[in-house]
Length: 64
Length: 234
Image 1: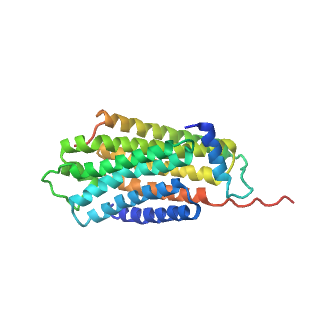
Image 2: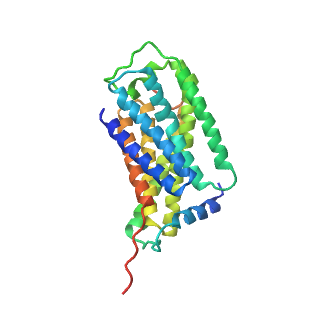
């Protein structure tokens, strides 16, 4: 994926059809909790991907 | 727990209709592919519901095909179309996914079954490994199921986290940032349920499917809602 290209497209795509109020003011929620949520989601995704990969190679136990 | 698939089915088809409506209004291949993925999701939960009062190997095959094999990959394909617009990569991947899906349809009907009868009192997730022969399951279904789910989970969840991160970094469109976080969390829920299922925790699957579709639906509604105008400064 061309990251910069995708990034500009997402912004462009998501800005179209929205009103002028696009920016949000920083708050405890956006500055502290959201980054924590994002990290937790990344870790959960990694865990699921690793377990799926282990299942593929028969390492993760499967019920039979 | 048997009523949960009914609720999941209703929510999923309502979600699919909302996504397809948006596709009709605005176009966009990603919306069409998400709608297709949600129809697979709904067919999976619908067959779960039907299997709670009507036993049938055919239904069990449809349940496995739609719920375990196709849903995540087609939802993820929609996200790939949203994020990758350069060249023909998204189109090529879609054709590959379509070919793999056709192969999955063939494989699910080829996998041999044992003489064990389907028991409507138990969830499908608890007994499919007893009904499909062990060798048949490993030879026909295991690898394609895992590969399709790996692809779907990485693209759908990864794409939603990436989008949420972009909105957060640029401090714009808070509704879309929250919407994408909910979509990522919702998509992870059935993926984790599937992992629990492989570990023997079969009851978790239905609940995780329901939580997953509800979170994704709320996330989609949030992400597609119009932000309110700020009050003018006085």
